[in-house]
Length: 413
Image 1: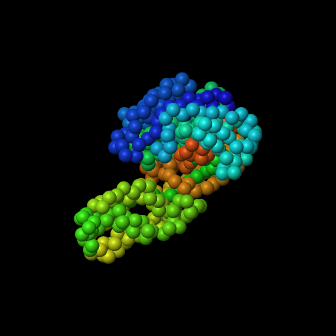
Image 2: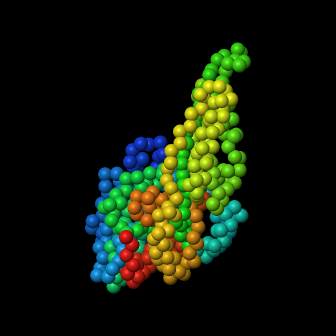
Image 3: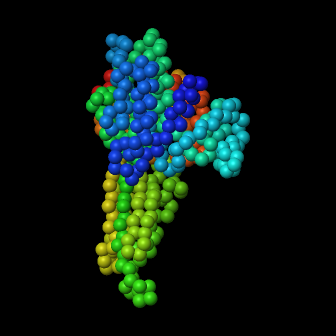
């Protein structure tokens, strides 16, 4: 466990926050710093063919050591951290033998990881917890996944008596801004299937995710002097507020769970002459996603009709789709993961992802890729944590997947 924790902390300290407004790949050049480290670390554990491509994707390949019929299995994690909280100057804190009480992350700023606010901390009693210092996120999403993959493959390489098929490793940039799989070389990766190690609590196994779309609402107003504005002035910000008020008020992230879909406004900038609203739209059923997209356009038409002018324009674009449709024909991939978890004394918990992973896009690119837990929690914020013991369970699950596939002799096309 100590080596796994140390490897994770090493990666967590590297600043890799991505940038959704950037048009480059990677979206931030700082992600290359971690990519270079990972190439060297893969070579250090015996993967001499490890490399970083021109877009900062890291690949490595382990050849089979058996003549048995085996799949080529891929393991994938992402290098960037979410822009939602600072990822610069991360200072990991280790809390050994957690006692089940509140954890003071930052005494000076009075930032506390509260058992009342996060009751599932009780599951961590007695474990070694890792947090940040209350000023940044930790980066377990997804540097824990990277560390778990590397330590698992290191174990496979060192224990040559373990029979295994070909193994492919991939580390991606820009997952947190929805572009992690865009330039992934599926053909060169050449895996029959893969797993993203990018989930949360121990046991999570996910092969359903949101269908996702984004929307930009542009509003045109008309500015005149307020003293003579009657029946002439059109305030674009006011129209924007009106537009938002016509969406279902309960269909937002903070009021939904499980298989509920939602609208989420992520940005609102405006003045009198113009305003822009940005939304993300999510639903597990593709037909419901379409209804949500249609509603945005219908609202714009209603407002334009009300003001007898083309004030509102809505541009909607799809982002990714529910991978369930791709995974269901190859449920061996899920059964293999379930069996491997059970052998690591982990109870599989098949839950829908209320979000997306690289695996969603990769599945539609021809590489079935469900998602497996890392053991972390409270991602994208200063209360993020992970335990060393739960990271070990993720590592053991990866090792068991590799072992069990060599025993099953079931080739996935």
